[in-house]
Image 1: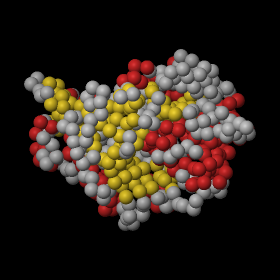
Image 2: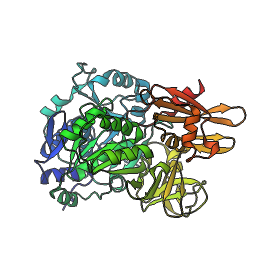
Image 3: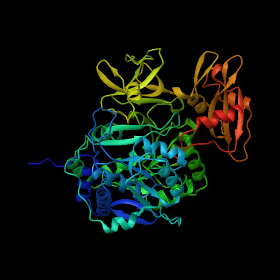
Image 4: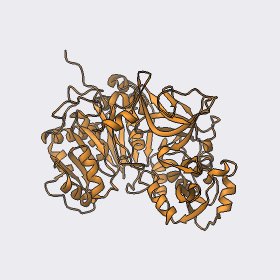
Length: 539
């Protein structure tokens, strides 16, 4: 007797069969039930299969190879993003997240790197997609044009998304789909070129979502009466938002999408949160949380919320304190992790951890490894090492053997994921996150992590947002420069910033110059643009 299909698509199909009438997704006043979501994912699968998109023509022979065709998603948030992801998985293709802010020349790097067989894009992004397609080494087999009201006509050869789905019959989950199929997530490229991280779906679900991909067990759990309505504010092209949406769906919950999807609109987010009675809200660090706090201050009534979840970058202490005092009944959960490691550690409001120090309680598989990546450090060690995770970690980077072996090394016979974050393991078991090695500043022979300085500067009430960068210095090699955006009407001097940071930083970590800007440049997902900060600091 043939085994039943497994993996993400099979689990979500099983859940839809148990809760067909429950809300799966709400966006712009429209609600899609679980039955509708399942039907539309099946229709996406049928359209892809009709154009020959599915398993790759050759099997994967190395862990940095993919056994799937790849479906590139150049989409803003909405029902199409998630149903295209799941539709691709149903035919044993793998979706690929593409930053919709990319220029055509940046976009084609990702499309060629993953050898995209199909591209699903929003109409308003057609110019960049079209420019990228013209430069691709191998043209995609399918372009699906999603009408977004912009009036932009389809690219040559593109098929209307809704029309194609309406004409298709839903396709079931492939009988040979399994948890060994890949989940692909491209990194943001904030500290280098984007890289496609290859996970087995089973390992991804366990390490990133905290569940085992057992379709029947998940469906049984999802069928229990519960109210889970999760509002994701970051773009689905960002891992934190994707993971939040998928974990909500694997629990049989409802994904809420804010009205505006081309930028973070704090007032619109609060409106959706209140109108749809969200139970959780997902943010990306201070870049999203500070404007949200400002918007909440302008409201007479703040809606209740169970959980506020932030990932991708650490919340500063003042912002975390504001959130916990302003939102009735909320628990703020700061999740530490990355595309390469999944969830590594957590800090919750009220658990005794000072978020200003970026200290977290590690997951069981999370450790700190030595500088040479050949041994695991002990708690209480004086050494600064690399944050690492063992066990259910990615297989590698798509098409890149050297980076696969560097980031996922073997230590004592086990494969580890070492993402590039520097950390110190304290004797009490807590891990202190110091920052990314790629943005570490060497000043006078001392290493200073940009994020550590940023967290200290965030204590000043005039600071709306900030990044820290190094600038060449004749004596010290590099000097530290604070690039700061101020709150409306606020002023601050370098001495005032240094005085605020003094209780949190050693003297050599203090900024030596201040550059005030109108706004700090970040990606749509809130990730910092350190190349921009270095340019501003050295002008």
